[in-house]
Image (cartoon, rainbow, N blue to C red; front, side, top):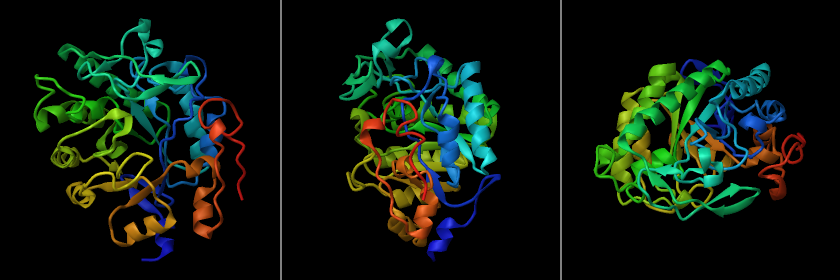
Length: 358
């Protein structure tokens, strides 16, 4: 299989993508008042619309779902309108964009929560992790365990956020079920010590993630619904004693829901791919639709994995920050620009929309 194949169109559900390269979700902490996307966000995403698919920065489904300062939401009219400016800019360039829907669970701080409340989690276990709040990185707050009767409200928040995303012009949504956030916390026994219908067994721990996926797919259609998972990533202090069995079961159920794609962080998020043994090829076989591979990909690895039919699409993260024309650079073999770490989180236009193209 030739390099050109990576840059040929790809059919994702009812959409035709220009190529097989995906811009992964990238938190930039630049939302404005009311957690509305930055005034510069339309230009930022529009500059990167040559990706086959853009996935938005993680976007909270409610104030309770927020875990970092200045991240955008998708639960108010102003937020929907702010995202509409983004999707219009992407579509004007011929691009496609999904919204990533987020509830951080215990990876939050009381200063971000309604009324200064404790963050919520499957169990009252504090994560060994930090968050970005009040312009600095601090330890996350002690969470409280969610009551059983609260879970339908969280499922409905995901459902409503998906409906709002479609109103905002997104082509679909990606449910964030990865990286030690709420749905991942329920799925993994290192964070979930419940003894009710949402804890204990593999089936019970998967229940909330699958109920959210079902609700979102019922609301906007499975062809517009993707999901992200990270079976063995230790991100945000998460651990699991049975990741292979847990995620084999989860992916079987997600495939049965006919979701349009499965987005898999292979290894440790932003770290080594071989952090723990795991059969990703098994997940690919179990999931009948599109498999997006993520973590540590460069052009050579993407070409190799595509040639071996190990994935359909390939997500690139940080390289897109400093290279708005990353697709063209990969296609032509041009050198990649380096990002400025000082402008990665927070700020305005600098380090956001001023990276040059070739």
